[in-house]
Length: 75
Image 1 (cartoon, rainbow, N blue to C red):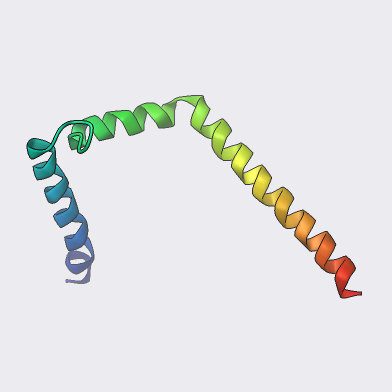
Image 2: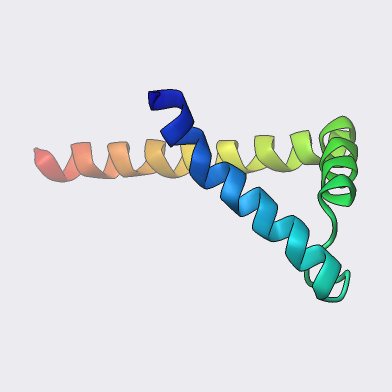
């Protein structure tokens, strides 16, 4: 019962998206099949991994800097 009520919003959004892909231009609402293949292409391409890795490294560098400055100011 709980799984059904949790999945219902996702099913509704998917159905609305698919309907919108039939009514609106393709650049606004591509079909779910097109979205799936594009997502698969992005994940299999190494560029996404490099972008995510560089973002994580920037976040960690910012946190390290904040810890150092915060530690220095706390004394």
